[in-house]
Amino acid sequence: MKRTLIIAITAAALTAAASFGATAPQAKTTTPQTQAAPRSDIPADLAKQAKITLEAARATALAKVPGGTVKSEELEREHGKLIYSFDIQVPGKSGVEEVNVSAITGKVLAKKHESAATEKKEEAPPKPHQR
Picture (cartoon, rainbow, N blue to C red):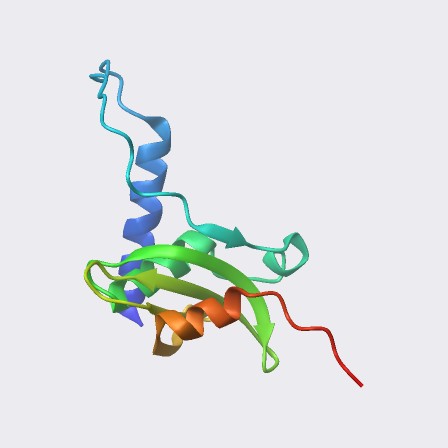
């Protein structure tokens, strides 16, 4: 628990520092940014109920998947629990690691690997119900 809190505080401090930016002029680069922003689905009504910030939960999830990059993140109610769900891509590996973090306690509730096929199935729109 202490370690999670330290990670969350460190992540929050780094986020705050980055938002203020450096005062020295930055050199312009011509290389395109290769890391896209994650797909995010954080409903405002659920965010109001969360006791843990998205940034703290993201830091906790990334600590469970060293070298990973968040591909998507969402806040949802699953099995009666308010959770952040992160799909984390690991370079050189197919599929993603899904990490669920409690939006109330900040604890990791689950971590599992999803194959590329399973991930594609989840992204597809649901089929209409047939009679």
